[in-house]
Length: 98
Image 1 (cartoon, helix red, strand yellow):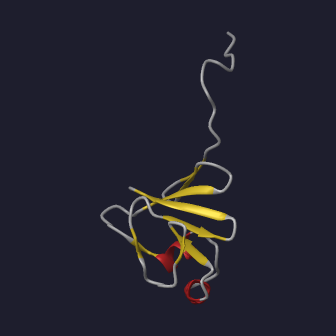
Image 2 (tube, rainbow, N blue to C red):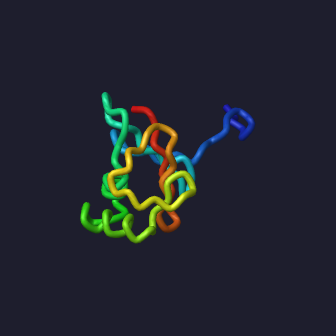
């Protein structure tokens, strides 16, 4: 049976259970935990593995090295909700529903 390329389109998705969903090379989705309405900015950097710890995350944020929705964000505990986009270096993550 021939399953030609027009039967379906293969997306580049890398699923990691209960953590994040890669939707392209540089953009991932980070689902909120069930029951949570937000996640704090510094925690996103830790969860994504972009930093070793909370202290490092807070330092980078306070120095203006992190953007939220395209704008530099210096509030370490900024509450991120579904749809917010966080950028650090060349990496991007979008907060999604659990």
